[in-house]
Image 1 (cartoon, rainbow, N blue to C red):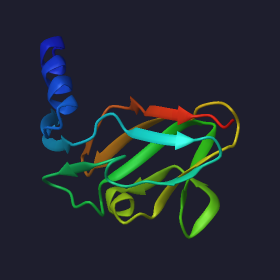
Image 2: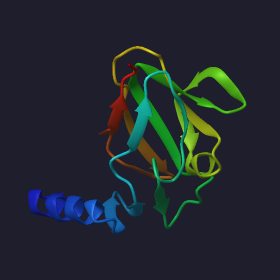
Image 3: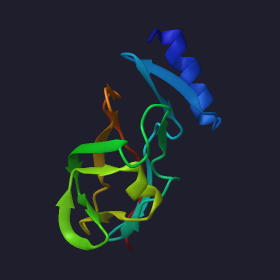
Image 4: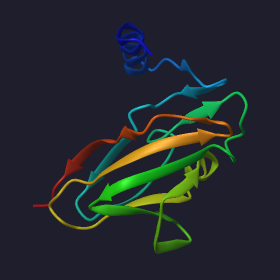
Length: 136
């Protein structure tokens, strides 16, 4: 993607428009490319589509898989197993309120990298956009 194309994509994403990115042969539609997370110190946050929201014309949300890595100061978990850290989950799980991010309770903000796979298409790895509120 050229610098100009990236700037246009970024500006459209900031305005809330769905943009289409071609990687390999299949498109993935990015609705929330920044992986937004607003969390307080020690909080366990249930993720929803406002945090992560991707669609792909060729892949159902049940098969649209996130892979998270380089996770610092917290972990992802399924609601049914809140103490078990995971590194992969689907958009359907996010939409269903099944996935949580659990902060480690330290005064440090969490961070992580994420990419999404939609069958034969995988996005580039992107850093999360985290807004962190430390305790008093």
